[in-house]
Length: 131
Picture 1 (tube, helix red, strand yellow):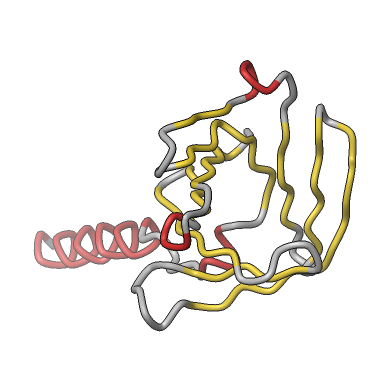
Picture 2 (spheres, rainbow, N blue to C red):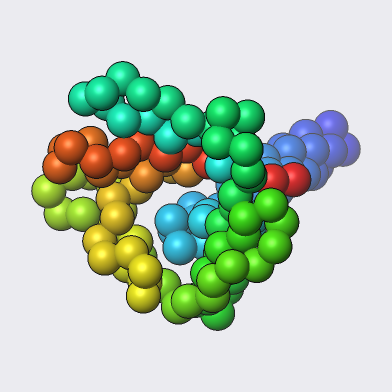
């Protein structure tokens, strides 16, 4: 009887552990949702802008159907289709392409989305997932 109970409990524990494992989502799945702009830095000039210093907020919304909406002060200002490709030269970096952005490099850390164009004297923009 104890052996059967032990086997049953082992099976239950194993089933619970397997069901709790996180799915391995692709970056195309992880980017889905709305992202609020936190700040933009010009690395070589040391300047920083954010919603307080610029006087406006902005956000990006990525949809499952490949549509990206851009908002300024919560008003829709642009809609475009987008594609995400991996950047073969840098692991965990990706390239976002749409009608207004040609090859913007980005990466994701937890609930942060970071566009990094510093390698070409460009901006580094930080967004956080809106809940």
